[in-house]
Each structure stands twice: as structure tokens, then as C-alpha cells.
Image (tube, rainbow, N blue to C red; front, top):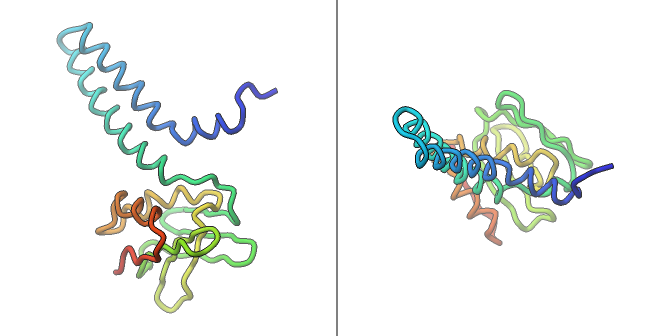
Length: 162
């Protein structure tokens, strides 16, 4: 018997980094206020680390979708593979020449361009698509703000070109 309803478990999983960051920052504040010396210094480190985890976790939680869309995404050592019910393909991060976002599809899609290959369209709701956030953020000139703005827009966008 499940003790936690599935939708609550999914929300906790989605916001896990924020919750962990809040716990670390709270422990850090407790140590700063209740101790002195080295413990207080370590407490400040926990406050800073926890705050950073809260910020990055909040951005990542906004990017994460339900994962109930078509297909599945796998990322292994920079190689993105999409297994879809009708289409699929793979792209190596080092070979990608462009990254786009198309909200007009149902569901919206990330568009990965590769030289000499057809574009790879990955639904944002595909199982495992949340792993693309960190991967896309590692592209030069792409940051979490740009990715979030794209997902909130109703227009097609070319986010990055090599």
C-alpha cells in the first residue's frame, strides 16, 4: 500500500532540490546562530550551498514536465537519443549545430539540428526530457533563463546556433 499519493510523490520529486536546499540552509542557520568558531563557519557554507541549491532547483522544477508525453529520452555521455512511437533518432551534443523550440506541436518540441541529418524533434513531455535542461544549459550562450523564456513563449524560437 502506498503511503503517499502518486501526484504528491511526483511534486516532491520535482521540487526535491528546493526542499534539500531549504533543509541545508536551515541547518546552516541553526549552526550559525547556535554555535561559534568552526561550526559557525561551516554553517555559513551550508547556508550558501543551500541557497544555491534552492535557486537552481526552482529553475529546474519549472523546466520539468510530467513525462507523460510520447516517447522516451535517454542521455548517455552527451549522446541524446529519443525513442518515439512514430519517430526517433539520436544526436551527439558535440555535433549539434542548432537548438530550437517549437510550441506549435502537440506537445511542444525541442528541435535539434545536425549537419547532414534530419532535425530531431523531441517532445518536452517525453519521459526523461527533463535531463535535457542541464545538457542544453551547457551549450555556449544558452542559460536557464533563455530556456525558460522559450518554454513560456507561443512562438517558434531558434535558441542557439553553432
